Figure 1 (cartoon, rainbow, N blue to C red):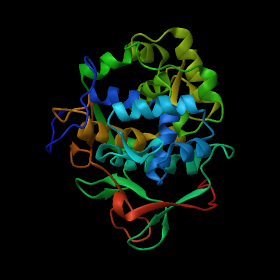
Figure 2: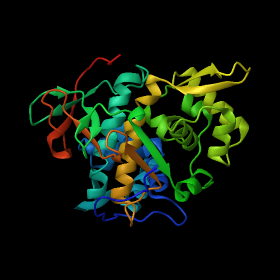
Figure 3: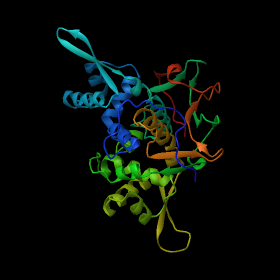
Figure 4: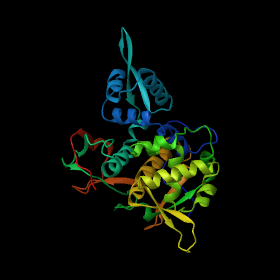
Length: 321
C-alpha cells in the first residue's frame, strides 16, 4: 500500500490532545449529540443562547456546558452583543464553518435512512448557484469522480488512531442510547458504534476480528453494538462461507452510505486539528491510487458545491428510499 502523506499545507485551529490522533480528537468534539445539534443550528444561522435553547429544547445548564466546550475546542466564538445585561452570541469560527461538509453528509444519510420520527424532514438543501433544491452526490475532488463509495477506497491506519480506540476518556453511550430512533448523530455520538462501523467499512467481518481491531472493547459491549446494528439494518449477520456454524457481519447499503460522514469528518480533522496534516486514518481512492479528497457535487447542475453557495431551508421533503 501507499505510504500515508499530506498533499496540502494545514493550519490547525486547535491541536489534538496528547496521545491522540486528529481524528480521535474530532470524534471527541463530534461525539456528543447535543454538540452536534448546536453546530447544526449555528450552521443554519442560530446564534443566541435563548434561540438555541428554544430550538433544541435543551436545559440552560446543558446548553451552557456544551457552548463552553465548543468554544474551548475552537468551534464557536463568544461575542458580546449586550453590555447591560452582559450577553454573548455564539458564532462559528473558520474551523467550525469547515464542518459544513460533514453536516451535509449527516443530513444526506438521515434523509435516506433515519426513522421518520427522528428524520430532519423539515430541511432541504438549496444550491444557490443554480437555484435548485438538491441531493448532492459524494465524490473525490482530486480526480473529480462522482458517486464514490466505500467500496472504491482502501484505508491505512496508524498507531495514533489505535490509541484512541482504547482511550477510556472518550464518551460512551449504552446500546439503548444508540438503538432508540437510530439517526446519524446517534451513531456518531457513540464511541464504540463509530469504531465498529469504521472497522466494518474497512472489511472486518468476524467477531474475533472486531475484538482484535478494537482492543479494549468487552465481548458484551461488542455483542450489544453488533446486535443493535443488525436490528437497525446497518449490518447483516450471515453464516461464514466455509460452512461452519460461526457467523460474520457484513455491511449493507445503509452502512455503506455512512462512509461519506467518516470521510468528511476525517478530512476536517486533517485540515483543522492536525499540525502535520495527518489524522490517524487515510482514505485512498482506488481508481487513481491517490488520497481521497471528499467533495460533494450538485445533482442538478453537476457543479462542485461549497459552503458559501449552499443553504439549508425549512421545507417538507420525502425520504430517498
